Length: 160
Image (cartoon, rainbow, N blue to C red; front, side, top):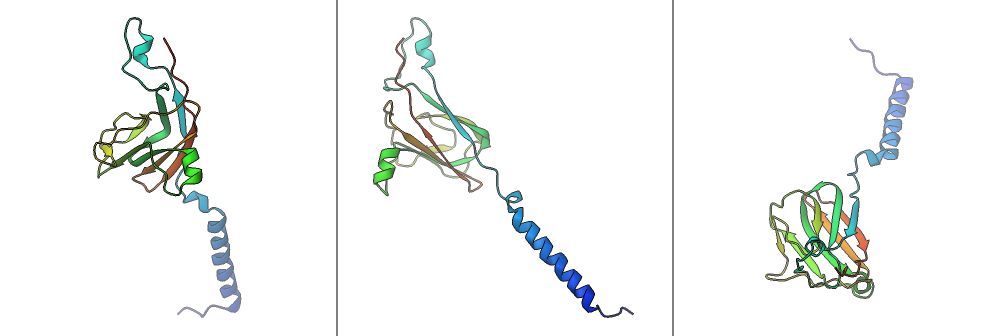
């Protein structure tokens, strides 16, 4: 037969539970998702680099490529002018794609280029041209309910 717990044993058990709770609280970032790291690069259009070929790009900026630190299943992509975000609670996205159900995991995207499994938020909407030297913000949402933002400034179009 088991003897009842003494007062000393109850206090030790309580201390162990309290220390475990404090440890979990202090190390709560163990349970948080990893941050999404986004980078961008603005490079001349490949077609304009090949001698004798004309680029179909009529944008005033070089194409902007975005990369992520890992493959992501995106559910939403939005690009906003930062000026508009600062002055308007309901800013207009210059590019907005959404996924209905099953987007393909991607590690990089290019501004304005369609992504398999995603479609424009508004039917038949096309991305606006980016303006060189203007600040923009990329906002992405993932299937894992993560959100990340990245500010960028597109470069003026390189003349070849």
